[in-house]
Amino acid sequence: SIAELDADLGVVRSKERESCVELQEALARMRSLVAESEESAAESHKSRASLEEAEQAASAAESQRCLLREQLAASEEAFVRSSEQASGLSERLADSASAAAASA
Image 1 (cartoon, rainbow, N blue to C red):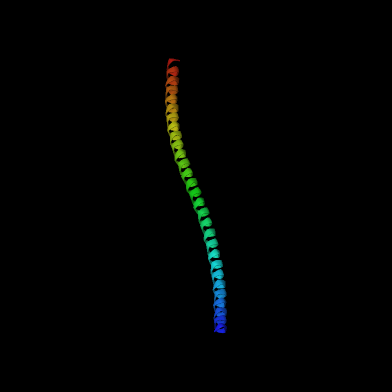
Image 2 (image 1 turned 90 degrees about the vertical axis):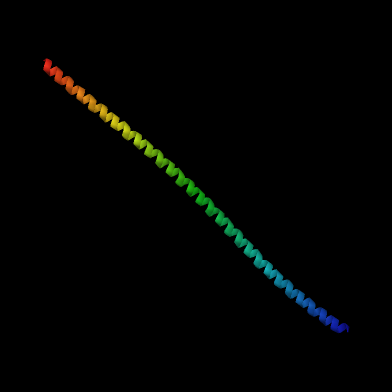
């Protein structure tokens, strides 16, 4: 009968509204999860960029350390050469002084 069909139609419409509300709630939850995921991805990207910057800084510091070691070694070699030259000059000066004293 028409009354039964109307009642059935009312039940179907009520269930449709409930399903629609449930779908909207699920969609809102999914949007929230997507937003959280995007925030997490952005933070991860920032962390990755920071890590890359730190690695570059460490690499630059290591290069600087190697350069300074090379400069130190060169300075030490120059000091040794200068000391040897000074020692040679001192010996010649002493020899000259001895020769001058002997001829005087």
